Length: 258
Image (cartoon, rainbow, N blue to C red; front, side, top):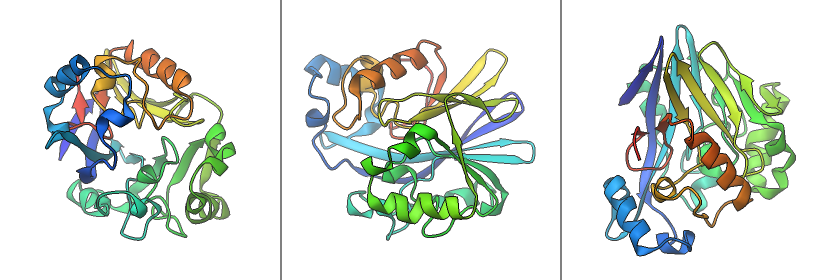
């Protein structure tokens, strides 16, 4: 269990699963050179296994006083929508228990986007976090037809039916330390979360970047981006602030220098 203090808030990394990516890594970053890969492997050696991409699936909890915010909801159990491609079922409930967090304590769930490896424990026909408001960008909700039908029927519609879905239109502040910033491109309504105190910012990036090669060269295109040019713009803009990165898929959860 790895955590970072940001003022009076604590950011806690929760690993829902680990396994190989389902495509050769060179296929999904077609513009990357041998030099790019060499530098990326030096920066993040734990993301490589047998010459291929070893992928982590992380969520993050933010504890601030009595409030607990969860950013993303992982792969989910064996029957979740991600089961058709994810290498393993998720273990988020065990990770939360290890962090001393009961699901009923979670007051907010920020879904960075609606890809199935980020929504798995959000709701499986009913909300998993019964006391939480789930936060999504309006642009992501409007693009529901781009995602698996199971995302609509098993996640979004149950949240709407129980009045647990809050739609945002761009940036918003959750509380004194935490704010949401729109970072579209990977999906139409992708969003990231910033936890700030003084000169310290931890940016929980979702899939704004998925591999260290996008830190070596933020302009590199990733094959599974809805709008590569917009994703590149969002990525570069966030990285220019030099935050500590809290990453969903890199070998290590926190990246301070690149």
